[in-house]
Length: 448
Image (cartoon, rainbow, N blue to C red; front, side):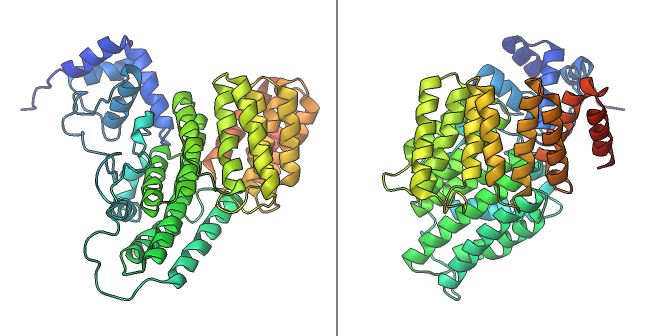
């Protein structure tokens, strides 16, 4: 005999407290699914089944818990939401303020990521919108150097140099090919090489350098996941990178990583988290940080403040970003130098947030002019942003030229970000399909 379902009174009470209809609740769960690459289509009927006692498959209980947490302003777990068999922590996640060491956390996360069987649940980890989900500076215990290290060869400058090269290689791969490129290779390298190197005997300076470079590589791994649409998994790697930078005592790297989390939050329209991360990243910058890092962090702070409606503060941060960039003036990325193209893109986002559409279009044009030829992803996203603003300003033919450039530079990229930008542009152009140029470009996009 089939077991009788038990009504989910916990979920019913939470929905009543949240003042959500079943339809609104289902839409919120669907939106949270999109943040981790899931195309969900739940409706009020689905919610009725959950309330009657049916249990959706993982990761839906975790998504339910997250959207209720956002709505109610406190932490709701899957167990509290009435799903007792689906209440575990996210795969590979140490609690934000746990006393687990940074290396142990990275080892758990990367072993899951590199395992073909278990990586899928990791990718379906929900994105946590609350800023408190982020480890704070110096709240992680310094356990990386504690205990007895296993016997074996000592780590030295060879391993440090290899890690530095890997950071550059995988970061450039993201720019050239998109976040879907070489993900498994980076996962294997982190699990099979980086974690063992961090656990080898080493002098204090070498160990600190290894921690810093491992933090930077985990940051790159997070960006690959984010560009692929798996924002919960990206958040886990960002948090792991913060812990490693903390263990290394590297405030500049820590601030740059948190700045990346702000950008992710903003892309997902979690504006409060985006501003909180940006402000905390800026506050964490040491006085002697590099001009590149200061420009990188201040530029994101400008964007977050602009979206929050803080015009004067946004322009002040943007001015500082530009001033710091002038002191640096090179183009090797956030851990070395900050490219002009990236700064102008942030300037455009800031100006757009402040309502200066013309200024944003001009900044995007400058950004495109200064992009490296091999930064195909950056070119594509810049063209997409410029196309959208031109079209909404009524410059249809000019927008078509920018759209054509997007289609050319974005062709073949393994990037969910550019795929979604392309789909959004198609929707924007559909009302203009009677234009000959627009019709031809719509046909070209279908062929691509």
